[in-house]
Image (cartoon, rainbow, N blue to C red; front, side, top):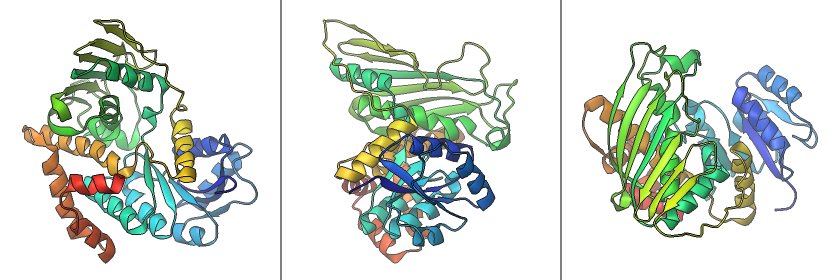
Length: 369
């Protein structure tokens, strides 16, 4: 590919404006189209965007298919609400465009499986911007974890007291659904492990300003037998943690601790040499940089949708466990989602791809390869 990656962005709200600034700061990307249900909102966001976001005119519209037809975009950046991720990504993939989408991959694991199958049918790439992975301290924490050998437990505490207003304060499970996926995904990243099962409880303290459960505890069994424990609250006044959470890993060779905002601290039984890791770029900046590089050279990309499905499955399993009071197997969540995806799929080619998977994990593995 010669020249900057030509991007078409969907979504021009607050997060959309942050992405416009991120695109403007990347010399290897330019904006050629901007889609929003309200074209006036899109036009205002574009007018407020930093210089360098585009090289020439940007097509603005409310219909993604029409804007795709009137631009020569290479890829779509999807910053729309989660409910719109499935139709947006499907449209883009079958129009021959690669997709970088905001988390979560979709509203449900079933829809996520449909999109993974769509990448197999189209041969296009779909990556989820799991932006909190893009943090040099998180990479260093992961490097230390690898040096410490077999892991026993990984613990994360997350305590914040934000007053969002709006939909988050009305959700049945605001913490688990809207926030915890960041920490669940980071646990998979740090340990290079996949989820097996979870037992979770959610609740709402009497002083909470949320309608739904703003607090939760969850214990995940991950591959190789390691346990990941999560304790969190979105109505915790005082002594707040980092938005990344506060972390501690215990392993056979020692322990490491990460505040979420400072360099991780390692204490090992024997002296260890842990190499410094390169800076992956911070959050959105790193996410876009990795996407552009991956599209250019065709290399595997972190947070490929086929891999990221397992982080979303952790969320669905935790919500189910909290609702039923039972330990939930991740494979049960995946198989139920697969059946739902087959039943709901409207495209014959995508349904055929889903039906050909020997199992969900095997299908996801093949798609990520």
